[in-house]
Image (cartoon, rainbow over all chains, first blue to last red):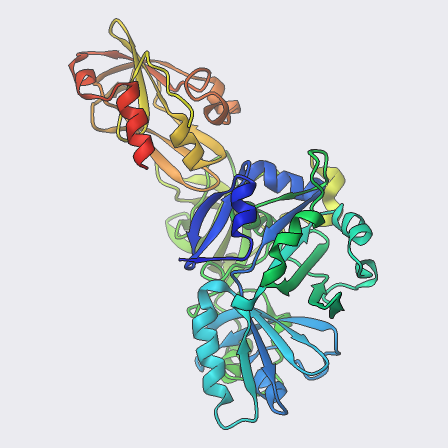
Length: 365
Length: 128
């Protein structure tokens, strides 16, 4: 199993390590719920080094990316990042990615579990094109620092003007010979940054995190990362996104440019014309029981949908889930039953996504 | 590695059983609570329910997973920890004390002889 450059950092901070996509990753340090709540109140540092980072060079790198990505990329400026899907010929989703335009190359960041297949897919598409791929995953580290206190806390400590970055913009360069990328993006629904550095400087991260107990930014693990993104209504590959789902049913039409001829566009155009038969929705359950992936949703005796992710929301203190439901039932406010098991089904309501927005802060305790 | 109380018996599925005459209190260990992480819900049987050794008597749910709680004695449930309905986290913070789950009037205490004592359970944890 692989270790990220932050492995020693995790052990030093008492992380409970688990195997994730072939990497030893921190599930939690003090607890999923305290780390989640601390992220929303102040800030947390997440190791995301396991995610794939693939650089693309050459005069046809952009054309290659336009062909494999659902999103229009050509008009992205240097220093701009865009969320996109990568599809197969049938319009099924191979991965969701972030693509960034640098001065002389592109960077594609993909999910750890899909890295091998995305590298292979890009490699296939690069054949016959003047484009070169460099998988820099294992030479670099990547961290996400997320929470309302982050921009001020890091703005003071980092020699980079991060507060002038707009959302989904990044800055890159070298400081004292150390190349860096800092992007104003994240996967928690909070403000913050994602930072890419050489793997060799992992030891320095302790100085980015002030050492005292009162420090605003604390380490957080994959457990909190999942509950945070779920509250923020963000999809996770392998749950809301897969080869069996499409970008339109997932409610992510904004990352698809149907005027472009990307791989899978034909199938997506058909779905757009006919309308998706199912839609991704939020579900709020009564009680405290959690709806796990695969749990059925029912209306009278009719099976109307399936849960893709579920948890007990630490911020909202409710049981929440995301599910694909038949399009005729996808209306906010509609009552459905969730077949969690046990004696009887649980009542629930369809609700719009996200469950939590940053501006809702005063509403939660 | 935290020590486990030596006044009770332990099971391979990480429950503890504390007998006071025929009255057996059942809970889960700190190890089990830590594996589950933040517990959000504990499903327990109603008082009066008959439980059977070897069957599940309830479920415990966390943000991470759902796990069965097994009965290792047969008998009738005579008390259920109502505090867990509002404070399931007691199982994380005090699993051997205020996080107790049910009290069973056991038909027969013999099954307890086959369970682990504190040092045997501690040895099991060292191997995990």
